[in-house]
Amino acid sequence: MRRPRPRRRGFLARLGILLTAVLPAAGCAGAGALGAGGETLVIAIVSNPQMEDAVALSHRFEAEHPGVQLKFVQLPENQARAKITASVANEGGEFDAVMISNYETPQWAENGWLENLQPRIDADPSYDTGDFIPSIREALSHQGDMYAVPFYGESSFVAYREDLFAKAGLEMPANPTWEQIRGFAKRLHDPEHGIAGICLRGKPGWGESLAPFNTVVNTFGGRWYDENWNAKLDSPEFREAWNFYIDLVRNHGEVGASSAGFQECGNRYGRGQAAMWYDATVMAGTNEDPQSSEVVGESGYAPAPRQQTEAGGWLYTWSLAIPKVTENKDTAWEFLRWMTGKEFVQTVGDEFGWNRVPTGSRNSTYDIPQYRKAAEAYAQPTLDAISVADQQHTMTKPVPYEGIQFLSIPEFQDLGTRVSQQLSAAIAGQKTPEEALQQAHEYAVTVGKSYQESGE
Image (spheres, rainbow, N blue to C red):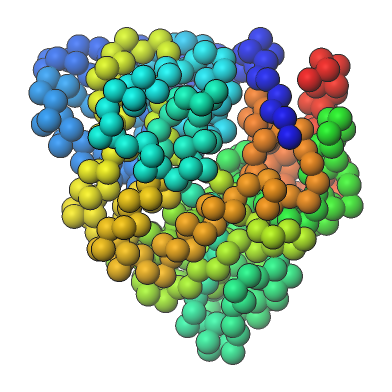
């Protein structure tokens, strides 16, 4: 399988409207500005519980680096992606460090937008990149060098309420299929008591509803494009996955599913309002945290549902990178090293509890006795899921792109978002599934033709 080369001019052209809309809101202070106490690092991150813990501990970094002040720009996922992409692509210099994923990292490294971190990594053996889970490290590398370092890594699996399953006389299989999950959701769906059979993302966004949905497409035997960039959203396999996902969430899912993402499903599941939740493996820490969950100790964790494949989960990592134009690269690296090092994991465990440590990135995390005890229900399932999260295990046909829950092409930010909007509209009942899929297919055809015409 080959990775298409990101096309810098085309990518920037497609970002034109985004740059105009987003950059003025970023402010004019600029990264690396001098505050009253000295140097200020501006860091753009996604707002979720793990990142919020890092912000809460940031005073420790400042104490260890006198004269350095940290300023965090925290935004919901869709907004963060837009603002960070616009800034880095336009070389705006608003941020000294940015939170990106394994979708952006290889492409942006090839475009020359990111600082190569490998020289700094090699100069500091104590940072120990050999400790990173191999699939995660590789996902953040370009031509053998790391251009981003992982804060946490994840695949996907199913959290399910063992108490509700037992009460209904149900048993979760060791490797459930989507058909079995649908059957469980139907049995356990209890709207009169405020319990959804399953919680699934329906919120528009290529990193929102498209993430779980694409894993369904893959394991149902579907794909976005064949090897010649012919769009395949109108194939029987893709259509089956499309209708299955929409029917499942509409008939047995949460209320307001078309606007529900990771955070909304997490809140609902934690309040005991869903019998199952299929999403990122990092959800387990939140589910088992007494400060954020009312169902601590009541969940089991099963592998991502599959249909025609050996596995069904995704591979993802929220990571930190330094834009190439950043002036304060040395200080920015010190921050990256602090937030992604072994010591940070220990600090989070000691301060906030072991269910809240960032996981899925370092093998050593799984050797910490306190963490092993706290994460007994989900530590091994998480590692197992990450270990088989590749196209060979999760797809049935060859494709011309890399990625499992995303397509590693620049156009996917726009294409995936447009398709997700159609999916959300069908979930909300604003369009029929067939009408929405036809429009989604037309979007994909346009992108596919651009690759066919360029010969890539």
